[in-house]
Length: 224
Ligand code: SAH
Image 1: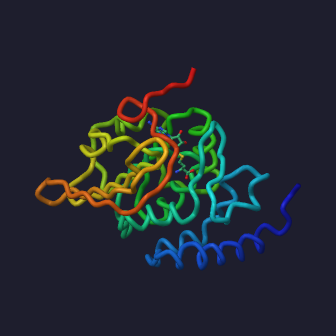
Image 2: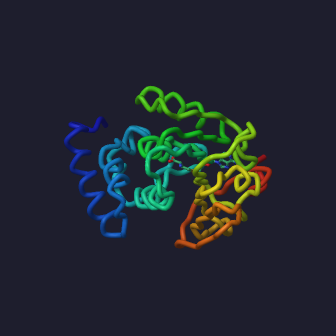
Image 3: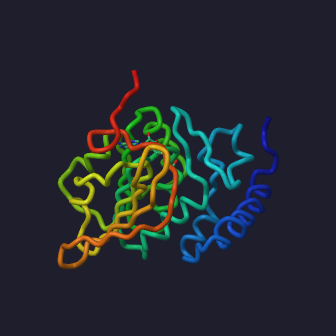
């Protein structure tokens, strides 16, 4: 079934999403609220799921992976404290929705996805929708970005038993990393800040639930 009048329907749905899911749960960064308001989330899921795109739920994106509920995307984006000039490394491109949100909040996003079909779909989608300040790659992001370099922000959008040291190494001084750390079934959102003197400061923000980070410095790949 085609969803009629996408524009109107989704504009109202996004207003409601902002009110009932974000403002009501402590999302108060005006830039995060503005990009969540203007970004068309229904274009990041298959058409059959478009009518559910602004609800308070995770959505399947294929290959057993999920797009997090709007609140989680907003919470992680807000936790990164983006002001505009930053370069951000994202592990777990998935649908590309979180990538799109980040790309409007910072200077450039470098994103890496393990599964080739998802990486390919997200790359094409982001290009088609005009998100040009994004560099997409396929590979194991638990090992960090393949080139030796540092980023102002790092976000891991898959659950990890422990934050990979390669990603902490790629965090620039005064940089901030946000990641779901814990078991396969439940994690805590943690925020790591690299202080100007090089030391690491870690905070626990709140419980969350993500699909696993699978890789050399994540969970083992037990697929056949
Ligand atoms: N942020 C995404 C959803 C994330 S789901 C969105 O907005 O849609 C988590 C994603 O992380 C999945 O697509 C999964 O394949 C990917 N992933 C898991 N382990 C990974 C790894 N080691 N490197 C890169 N991506 C990984």
